[in-house]
Each structure stands twice: as structure tokens, then as C-alpha cells.
Image (cartoon, rainbow, N blue to C red; front, side, top):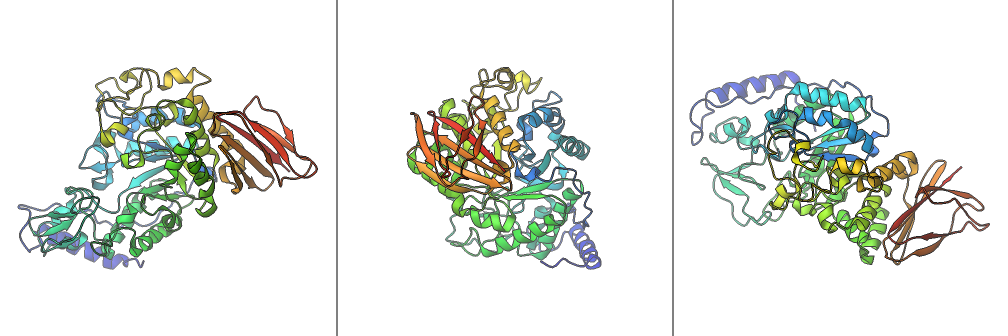
Length: 536
């Protein structure tokens, strides 16, 4: 997409501000002076990267800052609180953080109703706090990726307040308006057209989150300026929200339209102009094509099969084995996240049974893709018993057996239902805990390059036993996962003849050797994982 020449953009900006100050004409909207819109251009100024070259291989931790750690006693997590927990995240072994929106928001909770794209949410701190977080994370070799909402803004965003003022306002075309209410639309089970007084605007997710008109080149370039604003500060990339919904072509053509891929390819090109950055997109309805457009996309659908396979569902085991036969190895994988449409927290999905939970975590972390761990997943946090919907999944982090580990005040939301048993303090002292398992799987992944960035080969399902190989130059890993409740043996063929397979996991395992024909027989106990590594 062509950029607007700087002088022309400056003149356009001054004109827009002048017109907005005069009310923009057209009538039918806000009374009194209209707010100014920050349309300042931002030129690329890449600070470079100090992160390891392979930091993007993960795993990443998805962090809801509001729920992670409170530093000042107001019951709300903040950036300084997150900084205080970076050593924990480093010891867990993550190489990146995805922060749910940290920009100023109207919703004052989840953050997806963005009211200022260049300011930090007041509850979380300041830009100086954010800069300190990025510096502290980088010092530990951890990248910081932030959520970016390109599809819509908050209704209180100055651009929409101006747009709503009337058809003559210079920001009118920044959003999607119709003079009359369009008919025949049903998006996510409801009518996306909202009465704005001066017309009807499109807001698929909420009447307080109007959709941008991304056919307008000025809007797109403004988003690009916002991205450069954060990249210039050292942000390591973005998670893009709702990329399947960027452009609508009619009541039956509002998902994954061709323009969406073009928009995201242009974004990927922009971000790719900075050193070692990362982009991952959210498109539950059509994830694989967006992996090409964005660089990576969340593997929706695969996440459900990971959970079902861990419970012993043979059809799901086959689906897991087959997934990366066609999906790009750059997909981003997960067990769950902050949205209920992606499922409940893993603990609740597995009914508190640690055996399938561990198998699911191992599959997530040893298969291809960039794995994402939802905060608290590594200790088995449950949802809040007293809550429903998305809030149930977004409870304060269980650092100790009481809410005091999260805040010295009153938590902004009910805590996890199993905080007494599933908390960091208790599990750090237990070598057999779920936290210890996650740390072991992550360490295994990071110690063997074939497991973090290798190919995916020779996937075989034999009943409830899955085995596959991953390889890079000089190293080949054989991963065997037995989801069944009985011991399983298998013979793996096609390996180098008369070679030693070094035991990598479990610690009690022994080395094995292939025979003259390149075969080896391996026995895997019930509901367990075995990893063997061949090096040349």
C-alpha cells in the first residue's frame, strides 16, 4: 500500500484538525467542541534488537496485565507488578510475552475498546513504566509483543466522536456509516448496525466498539503510524485482534474477505522493516491462510484436538498427528486463552486430572509451532467459581494460597476456584508439580534445537500412541506420547543404522540403539512421554 507523502499528510492533518475544531459541519451529532484526533505521522526509527535470534520460537506467555500482579495495592495488576514477576517468567523458560491490550481503553477491563492508541491504560501505569518493562524483559532475553486492535476503536475514541458528529465531519469516513439501517445482516448472532443519531454505524462486536473503515487509506496509514510509534519504543511485535473481520463486502461476506489479507500483508511488511520482530494474528474462522499473510496465526481447531487427544480420543490423536502435515510450522499453538469461545481454562477442561493435562502440555511444547501458555496454565489455575463468561477465565494470578499474593488490597475480580491448592508458592517447592512439568518440557524444547525449530516428519499413530520426528542439521529428535491407560510398544523404522539414541526424557530413561536396519523398539508407559535424540 502506498504511503501518503509527508508534506501532503501534514497539510491533510492540519486541515482535519481545523475542520474538527469547527464542528465539521453536517450536524446531527455531538454538541460543544469536538476532541482533537492525534494524527501525527511517525517515521521508522528502528532501535534494533538485543534478543537472541531464536526468541520467536517461544514459548510465549499470554499475560493479562490487569490480572497478573498489583504493585500499589489498588487491587489491579499493573506494569510495575509485571516487572516484579519477570524473574519467574524467565525461570519458567518463556522467550516472549504477549500482553493483552495495555493501551488506554473505554472498557477499563479487557482493553479491546481502545480510546487512545498511543497512551498506556492509566490503571497500568505510564509510558515510562512500559519502557521500563521492555528494557527489563529484554535484559532477560524475553521479547514483548502487544495486542493491537485494527478492526475497531472505542466509541469514545476522538476519531469516532468526530465521525459521529455528522456527514460533513472530516473523520466521518474513518468509520463505516449508512444513512439508513441496512437489512439482512447477522454477525455473531446479532445485528451489527447501531443507531448513531446521525446515521447507522457498523459495530460487530459491541455498540461501543465501532468498526474502522479500512478501505480509507488515511485510516490505514494512521494505524501504520501507531504501529511505528510502538516499534520505535522497542516493542518486539504485535498480536492482531480479529483480522478476519477487517473489511465487510455485504451481509453474507463479512468474514475473511480478500482485502483483509492485503491489509495484513502490508502490516507484515511494515513490521518486517524492523529487526527480529514478530506478528501473530487471530482469525478463529480461517487461521491457516492468515499464517501466510501475517507470518503466524493461532491454530484454532488444533487447540481442541490437543485437549481431546490428551484424554485418549483416538480420532483427535490422529488429527493432532496430521495437523502439521498441511499447516505451516509457523502456526502459533495453545491449549486455551482469554476467550470462552476457545474453551475453558485447561484445568477445568481436564476436570483437575493432572495426567491428561501433562500430556496436553507436552504435545503443545514438543510439536511444531510457536506455543503460547495462558497465564496460570502452568500451575493449573481454574476459572472463578462465582463468575461466568470471559471474566471467569481472567482471574487474578494465583501466586499464593490467598489473594494477598496478587495484591495487598481487594482484588478487582474473584480469584481462581482452586487458589488454595494450585498456586505458585506451593508448586515451586514440589518437584512433581504441574509447574515443574511445564518447566521440564520447556527446558527440553529449548535444549534441543530440533524441538524448538525443527522439521516435522514421520508422524505415526498406533492406537493411543503417537510418535513423530523433528530434525535440524546435526540433530534428530524422536518424540513418543502414550495417551492410553496401558503401556505401549512400537518399532520405529527408517533411522540411521547402528546409531545411539540418547535419552532426553524422562530423566530415568536409558539410551537406545538402532539395529543394522535402522529400527528401534521403544516401550512407553501409560500416559507418559519419551524423547530420544540422535546427533551427528
